[in-house]
Image 1 (cartoon, rainbow, N blue to C red):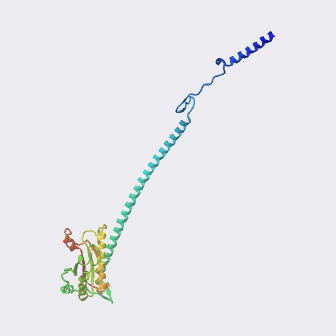
Image 2: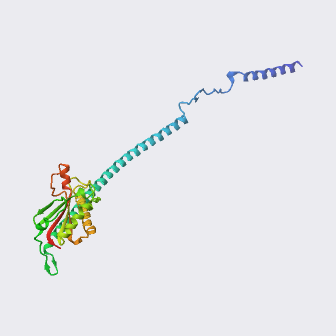
Length: 282
């Protein structure tokens, strides 16, 4: 009995000894320690890489790339604008050259028409009609003395007679538009021409001052002179019933001024229509 009790006590002591050993911290298994943390998130070890840093680096790279592309586009745009400006300047130069060429062509055309009209007038005495040569009228001076044109100047010019009519009495300033009183000026002139010079060739010469009618310069002055002479021709033939074949027109423009253009009175005197009566008949 005593032997069994001692045996039980030994077993109990052994069990307690084992249990006590398991509770000993020095005999426990490998320890685990908590990871340090901060308020900004987990602390990365020296060997690790933060994913946020990688994303930020990628975004910075893309922003830099966009900035580079933007600078290139601005550079290309500036170059395109400079090229467009060059093209515009070249186009304006071509337009100016074309306008100058057109003015020169117009002036040459007017000069050609003037020369043709002058030739027709000078050749009137040699024209043949009905097989006989038309002879000049040698009584122009005597007939011219019978003209009574209400103050319009009549001048002998070699074998021709010139009747000067101020353009300001016929046209609106700077135009070929006849004013209302022009008929009062031209009707008496037409009546006496029909009476005294029914067969004489008559040139209608248009003159201007030296002030260009428009930006076209001398070409514009010749155009204005030609248009005014044509308007007088229309009045003499349509309104007064004189033969169209009796007349020809010459646009003199600012040529042959009768007074200096330095004053308003001189320019007004130079703006005129001259009816030139030739000794040749038609």
